Image 1 (cartoon, rainbow, N blue to C red):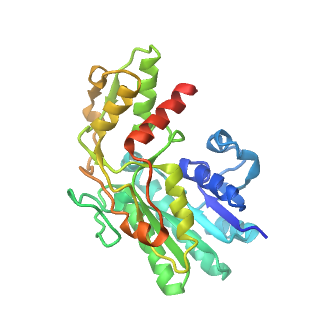
Image 2: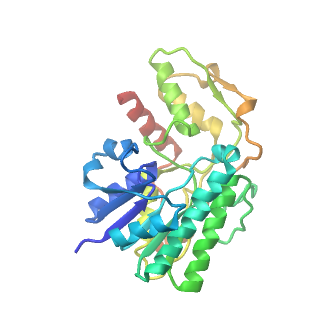
Image 3: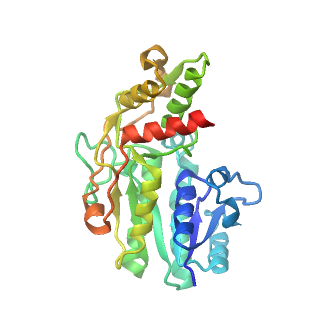
Length: 319
């Protein structure tokens, strides 16, 4: 009998890559969205796996809906990648962000407890939980001081997972993932916005790329590698939380410069700073310490920022 996995938020970047990985490992994979009949599963189609996945409608904010799907699928593993995924958007939609992430995670945990089944649970945490810690690298012991509604919601979900693990002995863990990119990133994310603009200009389009703070530093990784870490967390004997990162941070300006250089352009001729794109609060530097993941999971990032930019550019130019 193959293992059964349920991926909540399967239509996103991480959900699609994780589904592909689990299928390759022989899993039966089911995925959810709010309305599976009308949802766009373009990422699954791009990876060529749309027809191999059983899709279910589920509202994470509705406990009854969550419980029904769990009883129907009877999964061995649940990966919670659902919820509002944009830090910038969370400032405009703080209530929806908190409900979709914190309440959604709580409903999943409570449904697992209610069924009494030995389901292993992975929760998508975020480096945004740490807030602004200066030039230090964040590890699993670094205190949370989130500076966005998104970070606040992810921090609440993290502690829900920790509480259910300790109080009810659930196999539940959180991966505290730093920024991770791929060609499946939507254009509302700044990395894909940069890649798309550079490629359009290289093909002859006349446009200006408007960006916010170019001085911020981020720890950028490769999404297909990061979903491997999610899988590995649920294969351990004991549940625990892990920081997943490359351990290196680079300025957004460096990302822009390399992306434009990849298509033979000087970025400074096409990029302007737009103050309206600045967030009310933002992190100056974000960098993770993945030492624990390397020691216990045997996981280490191989792709760094330059590799990621090149892969994203090649894919975009080929479209």
